[in-house]
Length: 138
Image (tube, rainbow, N blue to C red):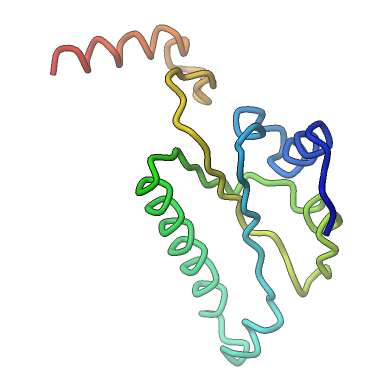
């Protein structure tokens, strides 16, 4: 393990998060990985082993969300990650180990900066204005 310079850490986060720049400045990132060989040994190569793996990631990420909320932090989880760069940087053995998701934590922002992914909807600024108006009416 070695310490990373700020720019190096940001570039690595950008690569790990597959270019999702709105997450790369999170103060803490947790890369969730699995040891497939151990899991399939434990479940005797049963197809349910794959299901258990995803259940575990869901439960752990929810626990991290709850822990962040308890501390007054914002959190996210994403499976839109760059497996290849993560496996190389963490020296994971292909087909035996792999990255599944990334969870991040940090202070809650007072503003929304990212764009909506559905281009058929109104522009993000218009959509947020609608959301804020709806919040004020409640």
